[in-house]
Image: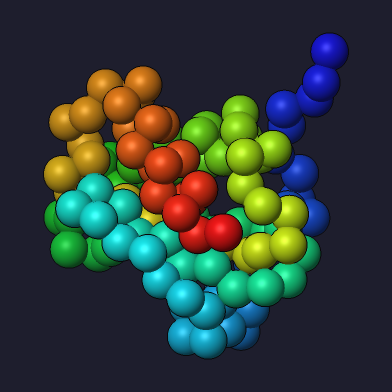
Length: 110
């Protein structure tokens, strides 16, 4: 059985690295998600805009982003680093549609 855990080495934590992905990388966006990607080892950062006033809603979206990544790592190209963000409209989606829409956007990043 494969391990689906999210390891610390897979997460972008340093502000400098996150800014590199966001500023120098390319960006894909739709009405629900924002994906920044940049060549490098497969690392990821999760974020939600501060325009969502409730912390519980922001945290809910970040948990969903992490879960989609954690369960579908193999669908994220290994040669890219990512910043995954969700917009407020994604709050009302069932998880299956949330997952499908995010993975569709990520697949277009290749």
